[in-house]
Image (cartoon, rainbow, N blue to C red; front, side, top):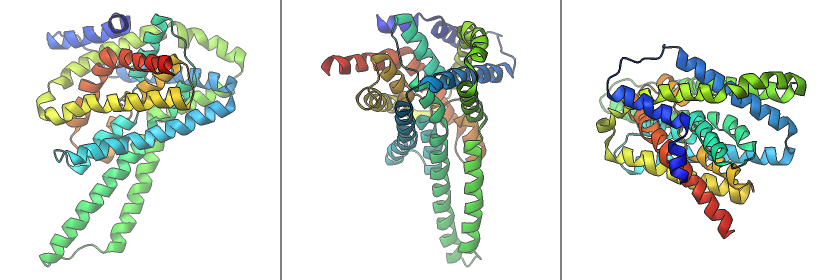
Length: 346
């Protein structure tokens, strides 16, 4: 019944409607900037909520949540990168860009999980909201570092070839200096990404605002929240249907990665949430969803800008065309059932 309940959520049904609208070649289109506005609103709303709850939270639990959010954010993309490289079907630059998506988080998937738990009457802690804000940047940083490492390896190989041909190669000092400048710029971009700024900035505002001031905002960030989420997922359904056409370009190996990696991340997240952070079933389910989700808002533009050598059809098709629908339709109830099993066995 849990899976059926998830399928019948209005937000999920609007995702399906958008998908079908694209498949039947409807002329329905969202205004170009509307998706950005909806994304900013959703990030701002969850950031304000996270900050408001953080101000009331137990400081040690909050710190532990942040620490484990960083652990997940830095570790999962490295696991994904190693797995992709070992397949020998993906070059290091594509592997770096793809893995960054799977260490970061999907706000849309997380919000759908909240709607799923709310519809099932399952309570949850608010600490995963803090983890959501924290986990955006680490994976981007890891992806950029892995790409830089791959780029340096390719440059070193080219230098060896050039030297063998008698061509003048750039000095090692010049290369190291350029790499240092590039790395500093990449790190700055990772920390100043728009999604990260909105999410963390809203969380800070929610944490330092007066309770009376926040109460006046609740109609804006609560009452219309689900309606905005439906619009957002409606648009995402159309985008996912457009990307699913690139499936043949991705190949069976990458398609399998798009399902197996979220399953692995979900299991790791469930264990961290339930066994380490000692969250309730609802809270641990949200951590599992964080571990399982793949970013399609913050990471793609960062990779497109900083890793132009990577193929966008690979990471966009995987994150938005395969992993996002899988998590929304199958993964969320599956992770919830996994945490329930852990609770029963514990």
